[in-house]
Every structure is written in structure tokens, then in C-alpha cells.
Length: 175
Image 1 (cartoon, rainbow, N blue to C red):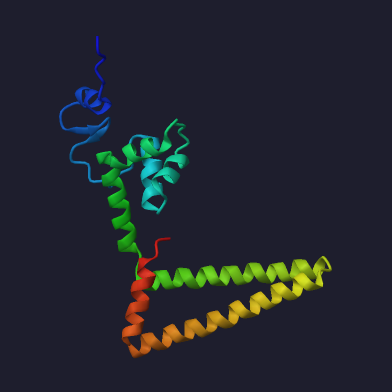
Image 2: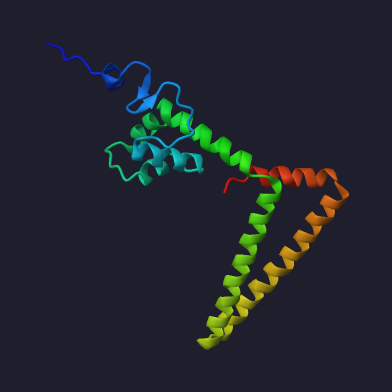
């Protein structure tokens, strides 16, 4: 006697109330609220943040013999697709060129502060070569940052096409 393969999607669909796409997720779900499944929510947030499907699946903490298949199946689930879409659209609306530029400036300034702290630690530990290398890195980063910030500010004042392309590329970054 041949065994009949059981389609888990069909079995789950049979148990769902009418109008639901998943347990606790109505058919008109737009992705604006967190998913009831903690695993699905973690997966969707990681995907929306730019993680790969397998990386997002690993972040959920689930174990699977075939994580690639499990991640692929989960990424196609309608509630996850809608949630990821909503989170990406939300991020795109919030991310303006000015905010991206401020984030860039903050990140560079934070890196320079960390390198300055490294210089102090190397001096205190009596490591002259490491101190000099860290100091050179700090000077190089500071000089380049000042040059590029001034260039972007000048381009914005002139409203040149290069400034528009720079803003578009900054908008393309997802943080």
C-alpha cells in the first residue's frame, strides 16, 4: 500500500478559521502589528533589516535539519511577507537623506572617539608603535571626514546633480 504524502500547508489551512492566513493572523493583515508568533516576528524583523533568509532563521533560535528549506518556506509565508514589506516601507519613509547623513556623521565621530581612546590606552600601556599607528589612523580619518563633509555641504549649496546622486545613494543604505 502506497503512503500518501501529507501537505502540511493544506493540513494547517484546514484547521484555520475562515478569513485567516495563519494562526492569529486575519486575512486582512497589513503587517503594521507584530506577528503573534515570536519566531515569525523575529524572522520578519531580521529579513527587513537585511539579513539573509538563513541568517534570519538562525536568529530565531530554531533548530532544523534543513535550515535552508525551513527558512525558504518561512520567507514565503503570507504573514511574514506582509510584515517584512511593512517594515521595509516604514524604514524607507523614516530614512531621509538628511537623517542618513546625520547617521553617517555620528558613526564617523563615534569611530574617531573610539580611536582617540585607543591612542590614550596605548600611551598608558607604553606601546609606542601601536600609539603611533592609532594616532595616524585618527588623523587620516579626521582629515578625510572633514574633506568629504565640506564637499557634500558645498554640493548641497550649489544644488548640483552630484548632490542629488549622493543623497540617493545615502537613501539606499539601510541601517
